[in-house]
Amino acid sequence: KRAAVGELCIFKVIHLFLISAFCSFEEIFFIWSQKMSREQQAVARARKAFETGRSKSVEYRINQLKNLQRLFSERQKEIAAAIKKDLNKTEVGAQFYETLGLEGEISLFIKNLKEWAAPRHVKKNLLTMSDTVYIHPEPLGVVLVIGAWNYPWAVTIRPLIGAIAAGNAAVVKPSEVCVHTSKVMEDLLPIYIDKELYPVVTGGVPETQELLRQKFDHIFYTGNSTVGKVIMEAAAKHLTPVTLELGGKSPCYIDKNCDISIACRRVTWGKYSNCGQTCIAPDYILCEPSIQNRVIEEVKKCIKEFYTDNPKTCPDYGRIINQRHFKRVMAMLEDSNIAVGGENDESDCYIAPTVLRDVKPEAKVMQEEIFGPLLPILPVSSLDEAIKLINKGEKPLALYVFSPDNKVIERMRDETSSGGFLANDCLVHYSVSALPFGGVGNSGIGCYHGKFSFDRLSHLRGCLVKKLKMEGVNDMRYPPHTLKKLGWARFFILNTVDVGWVGRMALLAALVMVAAVVIQVMTSQMRHLPLSLTLS
Ligand SMILES: NC(=O)c1ccc[n+]([C@@H]2O[C@H](COP(=O)([O-])OP(=O)(O)OC[C@H]3O[C@@H](n4cnc5c(N)ncnc54)[C@H](O)[C@@H]3O)[C@@H](O)[C@H]2O)c1
Ligand SMILES: CCCCCCCC=O
Image 1 (cartoon, protein in one colour):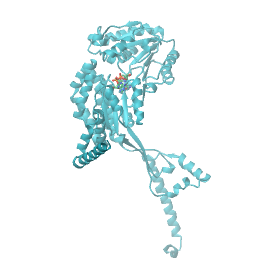
Image 2: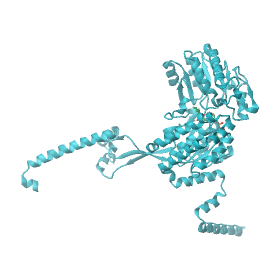
Image 3: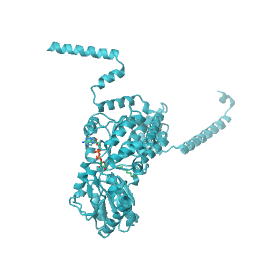
């Protein structure tokens, strides 16, 4: 037996020797990769591509972003056709809600990337006044982007834009739930952007789990909070940082003194766009009982205006993504009082825009994020009660308040917490790249969009470059430590200097003046010395 094992070992060693002697690195990689899963291979390729260093060049990153921009101008038809099959969005709807924002985001990055990627000089203390002190943003490495299905392009490509801009490699995992879109993404992305640096891995939960077993430098996940915990647990094994863009129940308070017709128009749009499958959709309404009927009537009017008498045949009204979610949403209606809508058709995944009245906090529909076209109204006696009720639940992704009164708006903002806060409108904060977008507590970890994406997916490396001169200044920090040295250290460390452009000019001017005075004093003293002394 021992002899057989010995022979096998010798054979393995010879095999390895032959491989390394006669094969190129690519061939060795190929042989080795035969034993790897598709997911492992994608990650290994992305890491290898990252290690070539090509993504470090800002020009290269901008080029990749321009290619991505070209994808959206040249492939709208394929993108829209797949989204139509997945979620019944029209071509205009697909551009409006998905790709328009991405095009804007890419333009923003192309315009600002050089500035964002450049070293950022920071305030110094007196001790480091003569040093160069700055933040140097550097790529993290290989990022895993896991997307959700409800706005499949928007929530998968937006983090990818940030990852590319920050100089990372990124493995893109679109949601398997939007079957057609994930196929189009898999086909199109490699045609436009570097397929080694940014591979697309399709598949379901087992494939995502296999990806999660690999080591990444950041995991950017968009989806529900339950899976968010699974992601964080997997990331913890490699101490990988995560961004979790999750969901939750986003409340909407309507003050009785506001223009109810305008408020309901905006709420109707926010709720029923994409058939209620929007992470920041107003989940439920809180209002005083005296305005409940008015709210119901106004929402009903808007449903008719936006989606006609028969939303089922209206091209702008979407569908529930699949039968599993259809059943989930329908189950929430069991103990509820329907005021508007309620019609449905399982074979078409259709649920009409629905309003529920006199809903209690214990109702089924209030136990989890609805993520469908049901709008419960919970009567509350006052703003105080609304705030109390909101604070009893998990911190939501968005919080909406409709009121003409700034005091009401400010109270709602200051006495609650949520990922984002919006007064007198719904959803639109998502479109402002200068605002951080993300949750807090149960609705997520970390934020992105615009420069926030760049910073989130960069390592902000603190750098200090000192000269090997002026060693005397450092004496105060070396032992023996004395009270006198401590006094000096207090003075030097506690005083910051913001030497900006104007500051530097002023400092230079002051130094020139001091030097001029010193030279003048010295020359006038020398003029009064006897000639013999000046010569010696
Ligand atoms: N904060 C945001 O920006 C944002 C945006 C869109 C959606 N969402 C939230 O996402 C949720 C809807 O999306 P979803 O969760 O149904 O999407 P989903 O089912 O498509 O899941 C998202 C991803 O998680 C993976 N996944 C699912 N189960 C897994 C498991 N057990 N282990 C490992 N990976 C797994 C899937 O493969 C998929 O790629 C809602 O809660 C919504 O609010 C949040
Ligand atoms: C302008 C509205 C876009 C909404 C996109 C939300 C992404 C989360 O589901």
